[in-house]
Image (cartoon, rainbow, N blue to C red; front, top):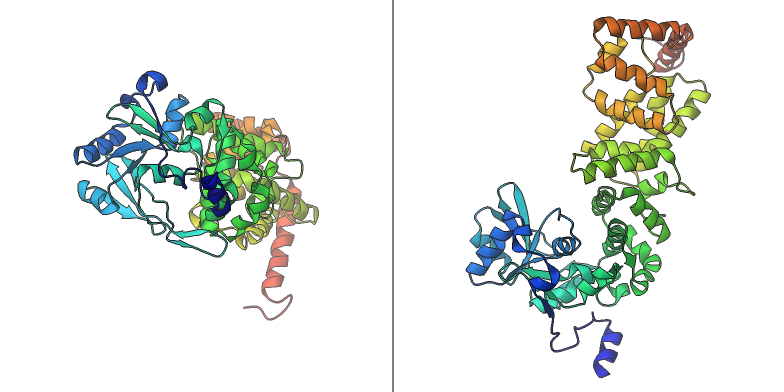
Amino acid sequence: MIRKLIRKVLELPSGMGKRRSKPRVIPLSQHGVRRDQLSTAALKVTSRLQEAGFSAFVVGGAVRDLLLDVAPKDFDVATNATPEQVHHLFRRSRIIGRRFRIVHVMVGPETIEVTTFRGGGIDDQNESGRIMADNTFGSQEEDAHRRDFTVNALFFDPSDESIIDYHHGVKDLKAKKLVMIGQPARRYQEDPVRMLRAVRLAAKLGFEIDEDTRKPIRAHAHLLKKEPPARLFDEMLKLLMSGHAYACLKKLREEGLSRGVFPLLDAVMGEDGDDLFLQLGLQSTDARIRAEKPVSVGFLLATLLWQQVNQHWQQHIAAGEKSLQALQMAIADVENEQDNDFAIPRRFSVTMREIWTLQGRFDSRSGARPYRFLEQPRFRAAFDFMSLRAEAGELPASLVEWWEAFQRGDQAEREALINEAKNSGADEPAKKRRRRRTSNRRRAESTGGGGEAE
């Protein structure tokens, strides 16, 4: 009773006030996960550490996924060896991190993240409870208490193929329940990103968030605004690249984590959240991820913000601007809105902008323009994007069919397609006259509206 009172007052994670928590050791016959299901790199790292006299376990999401019969994306290892000792054992390794030091061990093309068991103490916290430094090492038991969710606090020992479970993680996993270890409110204060992880894992795994774990999320959502934009951007990408992107976005809304936290997601999730183009784009991304095909982050971001760009584009056209000029203005509008709120790295924003810019060229199907368009490095990405627009009803399917035929056709077939487009009025003479008027206006603006020319 006294221990429970102490834990409640101090908000210690469950078990931290006890002398010792005896874990449940689950043998192979009861869980079915074998060592040959590990990657070669994970097996090599754990074996090398154990041969050197250290404890070493595969830990976290990899163990969880193996129990769910899902192939893990990567394998993490936890050990009682210090970062320096791990680095000394593996020639191809490096120590990274300041808040908590870890070791990246490279084995062939694979990188294994090796962490030393974290201790019960915390080096440094700010006024809101956020952990600023966390390089106190401890035992496996303490490390288990410091992990976020019970299903992520499972240790797999390759030497005897047993699973060590301190927090009934296997039971919660079978119940498809996401349970925070310790006091959820305090854990969210220590690291607000845990709220995003709860949403991502629940959506990805189809788990229910335990009521005690879910309840404090809405009240602590404001803490995410204090996180570095670059870290939030990385977490957003994890959500979008989870293979369940749209489900994650809907879950963010349900738990009160979208408004004011992710300006970029605020922009794309309408009040009803039923934008067909966005759904189709994210479903396409999910399908590629599940099929283990590469995904362009620039393409994905272009999909997210297209609704905004398209709205501005149509507004500028309605105001009398030529289509291509209106599109450039729309892109500038959206970029200006985003630049102040969200840090999209340039390597992604350049691709995003190119895909948008090329959308205006699909209407140009006369003369040599279609041939020149095919030579654009981003043509295929822009075409795939345009196909999504047509699927969402923004464009006629005949435009997609024309460009598909043009890509496949020989010289004669392409010329026939160009003539067909010309006869159907694809390029109107009025556009040329309008271009001339626009050029005259630009010339006037560049000279101050009638001032002295060059």
